[in-house]
Length: 102
Image (cartoon, rainbow, N blue to C red):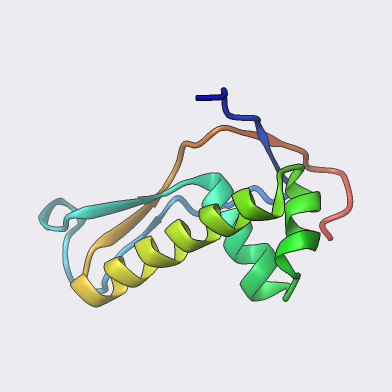
């Protein structure tokens, strides 16, 4: 297996947790959304980029971008449907704030 390349992330999330309202965090199960997964959601779903454009922005292949996006969407859907908290952390990425935010 090849080593993973750093994903280029141009957005630093100011929030690292989302949770259902009215339930203490200690009572919730968590789903982890990687920082690169959040970036994939931002590029595809918020900015409307194609997989090819977004892959170039993150300096990864279109296919790799698609896999990251699919996993991120699955994790968010599971959290929403199961009432789990979303913890944003981790992944192999390089933060490139200061460059254009596509």
